[in-house]
Length: 76
Image (cartoon, rainbow, N blue to C red; front, top):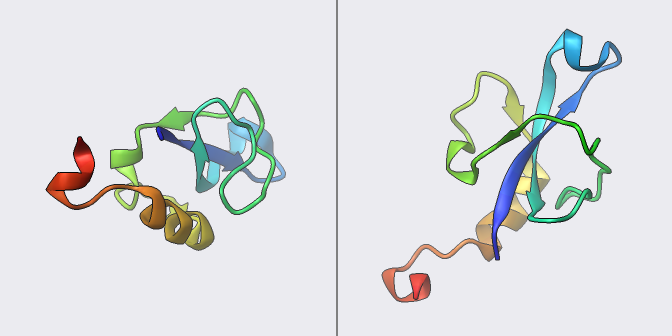
């Protein structure tokens, strides 16, 4: 399964900057924590998780780690 980081903006919208990053399964608009994400929100590669200046959603991170392969045998 492929994933993508998607931005959640604060009350000022995109011009106010990213409030928090969520993880979304490819092709979906609902974050792994259940929050609906704006279809036009900025996106990043899942490998950027945890390396942004903005916070990453703790719940999305926990669910993502359960789905993401981390052993060499799981990458096949």
